[in-house]
Image: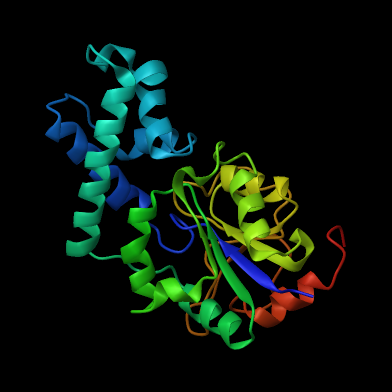
Length: 254
């Protein structure tokens, strides 16, 4: 029996990567006087590295070490990430954030049916506030568990954040379904034993989603139907609680 839904955030609840996170990183570079700018294509490649601080470290050590300033790299990364977090919060407050199609609908259906809701993300906890507010004024209270940031030692594709969420929910993976948008996220959820719905973004559309329960372009709405891309076919315009419950009653390999 399906008892819980666990959601990634960036790219899953809201498509925030290209025009919010990327822009915030670039503002952080400028604030430090660095001649660094991540364009759309480069940022897409950097998303293979999960976690903002890890992404910065990877860039300065592997991608463009020639742009690394002298001094303590760890201190620079911490400073840049703090500035980026501030810039991201400002962008969310001024530009706003839109939930992806079908997200609020499915969350409401799950709450009405008494399912538990959780978040499992590597994003900084402070970044969650405006996204949760986009759900509603009491959006944070919709989730019984919010697992975010550095709460676990290893980030996706390691399963740690999902294992943490399941333990906090006190539920086995067989009684939950995860929602992700990226290959790294899918690997993390599968590693925790979770069946996983993938809603792709422009950045992740061409990634490998073998093992996903289903792959779609969005969760869908009655008047804005999803496009089925792989895995099980929902057989309708949207992924709703009824189809998730139907899938949860079947053996994972069936």
